[in-house]
Structure formats: structure tokens, C-alpha cells
Image (cartoon, rainbow, N blue to C red):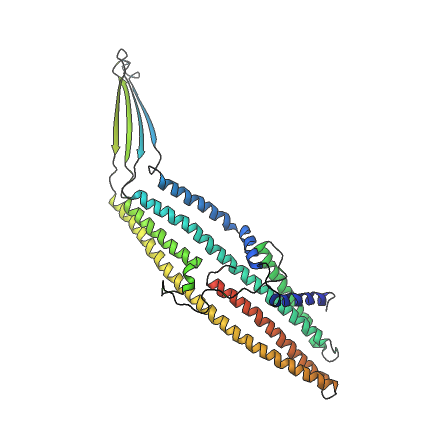
Length: 400
């Protein structure tokens, strides 16, 4: 075994003990999530979407659906008769809201602003899931490194008796250490931070464990009503409905009202005369275009409704599966605890028998190997329980 490896594994042992025995301190996962979010490439894109939604809302708050336009015209006869006839015309025109269009656009803008927040929450939840997976991969691999080291140390008790076991344990230790280095690289790539020496097991979720009936919506677990993915799906359906309402109210191009000022003279000896007037432009409705836009908006609404229903079903199934997995792991943990007690008792008897000369070294080594393996199994079950809790909270849409 290479120099310094034993001291490193002892450090791993201390970290593993701290994971489950020390009181809770800083929330490593929550801190890591903030660092990972700051590095996420889509975070800035969502900020830009926030500005887009705000600009859409500003348009909806305007007195007119678009800016005014200024036009200037000149009519002069100098190219022809040169009698000095001139006509100047200035027009200031602005579009007008169609009935219901302003309210429909305001509704769409509000849904777009909500969409940005829903996408942000869903993306942060997805990122939290990656962090949880990376964190428990680190914990599990550190436990595996420790177990491999202990196996190698045990085999060194009698090199002549277990030389092959020693070499095999050293090879396994190198492989486990390489896997640990890879897991640490995944963590560093996500957060930009070094892998933590300690990762807390998360507390059991407050909602959804055990299952709770929903008074608001019997078709889905009550704990999922605030799930970011479901909120995003519901928001997408609301946006589709708002866009259908907008398409229905926008039956034609916006009408325009203009103020006209005219200044003209008939020849060079006449004085300029002035006139002022109002011009109203009413575009005709395009039936085919209206039917096309309405049909497209209705199709988008149907698709969003179907996707929202599929999201509900997927999340509900995910929570049920996570609950079953946690229950199974807790049962396996109870069994692992009993096995550890049994192997520890067997080891005590084997050591006594060996000291009294009633058993050989091989029997003692087997008893110690079984005790070490039972201890490692219990450690893995504790890590697996922490991971299962994290997976349940992830399925429920709860952040670290």
C-alpha cells in the first residue's frame, strides 16, 4: 500500500463519522447551490427574459399599442408651370387599441413574468438534483475507499497467509480512489469549489412523508402543488390561454387616428391658406389570417394542457417511487444494524477462542472480515438513507 494512504483513509473515516454523528452546521448543499447557480450559463439568459417580460408589460400599460408616426408632404409646381403653387401637409397619426386587446396583452405579459420565475425555480431544482447526486456519490465513494483500505489492512495481519488478498485489496483501493477523484471533479465542475469534507444528511421532508391527502386537488399528491416543474407547466398552459385570448381580440390591424395640418397657395401672388383635419383609418379584418392565428393558439393551448397533465402524472409517480425506495432502505438499514451486532459478537468470541488456542488464525481473519464488512454495509446503508431522503425531497420539488 502506497505511503500516506493509511493516513488519508483515517481522515476519510473521521469525515464519515462526522457525517452522521456531529450536530448540523452550515448547509453545504444550500451553499453549493448558490455557487453553482452563479456559474450556470442559463442564469443570465433568464435575467434577459425578465427584461423582455417587463418590456411587454410596459407596452400593455401604454395609452396606444404602438408609437405615433409623423408624415410630411410637399406639392410644388416649379417642375412644370412655375406658377408658384405649393401645398404643405403634416400629419401626426397614432394606432389605437382594439376592444379587449389591451387587457389581453396585459394578461399575457403577466403570465410571461410568471414564466420567468417558474423557469428559474425549475432550473434551480434541476441543478439541486445534480448537486445532490454528486454529493452522495462523494459520500458513498469515501465509504467505499474506507472499506477497501480496511480490507487491505486486515489482510496484512499475515502476509504469508493472505498475500493475494493483500494485493487484491490494494488494487481495489486504487480503483475506489480514482472513482472518488472523478466524483470530486464533478462537484468542482458544478460549483467551482473543492469537494467538502462533510456533507449533511438532509432532514425528512415536512410535506409528503407520510402521504397526505389533498383537499385542493385529489388528482395529485398534496406535496406537489408547489413543485417548480408543475408550476412551470401550469404557467405554460396559462400563457397559451392568454395568447389565445389575444388572438381572438386582435381581429384586424390596429386602427389609426391622425391629426392633419395643411398649408397651401394657388400661385405665387396668393397668400398661404391653412386647414386642419382629423383622419381615421380602419383596416379590414382578414378572415383567413384570424382563423390561422386562432387555430395555432388553440393548438398550443391543447398541447400545453396535455403536457401539464403528463407532468402531474410523472411527478406523482416519482414521489411514490421515492417513498417506496426510502422505506425499503430503512428496512435494509435495520437489517444491517442487526448484522453488525451479530458479527461484532462473533468477532469477540473468535478473538477469545484464538487467544485460548481453540481456533486458528484463518478463523479469526474470517470473523474480522465479516465484522468489517458488516460495519461497512451499515455505513453504506446510512449513506443510502441520506441519499434516498434527498431523492424524495427532489421528487417533491424541495430545495436543499
